Picture (cartoon, rainbow, N blue to C red):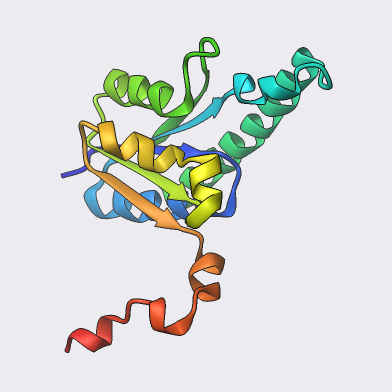
Length: 166
């Protein structure tokens, strides 16, 4: 059960929470983690006249390096085996969900763990959702991990309470 777990990182709090969940699962199943950070410089193309593309790539790669370094340290601290990689979208027609799907296929993953920002309403409509797009086409189970802070900020009546089931 879940011997090869791919965890998608983007440097956000929700992806750090996803890493924590992936580590917990890997410890329980004695599985391996493959941490991936995807650089997507093409998503910034509307700003191409204002931003030097090579400087942008350098900043995105540095963010990825730091996120993956943190993941490797967390794996070592928890005694979980694994590795990491930084991948980059291939062109403007490529996107993070497709790039992640290629990684999952290449790794023969049993499970993908990823954070979600939990956007709703107009924010979700305008910005879309990497997690939602990935889940729609996923060929393996996906565990979505929300940012704890966002769950705490939701109105009380909208929160799910496990004890209400008993």
